[in-house]
Amino acid sequence: MRSLIALVFCSVVARGFEEQKVLLDHHGGIKIASEWEVLGPFQSGTREQQWGADPLELYGGFHNITFSHDPFPSTLNGTVYFQHIKASPTETTKNLLHRRIPVTFPNVNWHGLQEVFGWSALQFQSWIRGSINIPLSGRYGLWIGSAVEYYLDGVYYDTGNLYDGDITTYSRGGVFLHLEEGEHLFEIRVVNDIRASGGQVPPKVDVKVALKRVVEELVVADYESFGGWIVPSVVMGTGRSGKEGGCLAGEWGSLAVRNEGSEKILITEIQVNEVLSPLSVLTHFRDRLKLIYQMNRFISSQANNGPSQYISPTSTIPTS
Image (cartoon, rainbow, N blue to C red; front, side, top):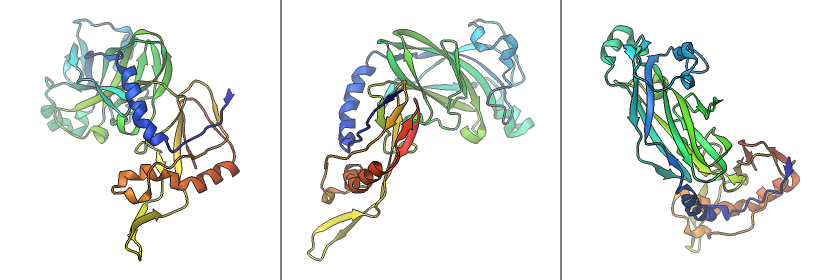
């Protein structure tokens, strides 16, 4: 364990755009497979999504089954086979390199199943298998959206986000690992829960795989991320002199910080040291990001007088 003095500067807002350019360079050699293997669909009951009711456990689990033309029994279609599916083009959003893998089975008579068994017939589970290629050994963050659990290089993780497919916006969950240079194998259990994906026919699950290379161990969460920035609203007005301006509606604020390193971090102090924009230039809600420096008088005082905070690896905590 190491003790670090965490200096959270408001300049992180402007600096974030510069770091994004650097991260794009780091992403240059990372590859997420464009073609994935899929096996399914198999029946999935309500509340059976997590940790159980996987029919492939009869064969030792999906990670012990190689691609073949052998049939597998399924109550949804009689028999199912391995197939290949194409992933969407690779994209970069908020420092995350990501790809969407659409999992759907149009050859199944979903309309007939729904007429007989109702909406529960649309719930299914399946497994997909693909790879990522890492050009440089180092620490990486991984996020899986619209999935329950997965294996990475044969190691099991239950950190999927079944009810949060938009992982590039909120960056919830995720796992941070040291990955060696070369190819790494993903095997992801996919579940269609109509409470999360809706009752569309044919049912479809868009699994999203996202990753990034860790550049800094302690980072400030994005403004729009889960548990990100909670700041007072800015009240605009015109003074008696006719000059336009504004002020913050409150005296309290909170920033979320995440430990992306491999060791526990101790936050002992927070400092705000830079004015990025005069209040008068505020023209849009998102421009509140440029005004966080206005909170320095209470953020600094609270941090200096409050207790120290520990952040475990992969954890995100609010700091006020």
